[in-house]
Length: 84
Image 1 (tube, rainbow, N blue to C red):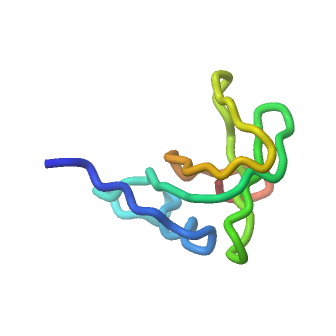
Image 2 (cartoon, rainbow, N blue to C red):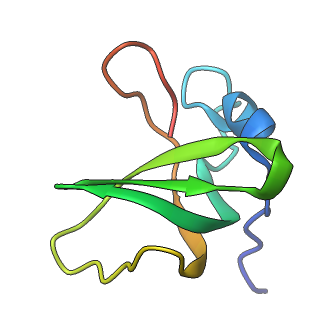
């Protein structure tokens, strides 16, 4: 049996937030977007007309501005209550 990871839009991030997801559900999601900003260990991707998502990057990440990416990651809190 393979692990299925849902592909979501930014508006659905809160449904996969650790505090709102059920005890047996996953916090891992896939999201598709274009890299529109890179600042240190954070990047911003724009998901068409559906909004932006902030990503927390690992040191070995190799993103480039304007690149279309599909990101697989866990939903978590950022300072200020944002979810990424």
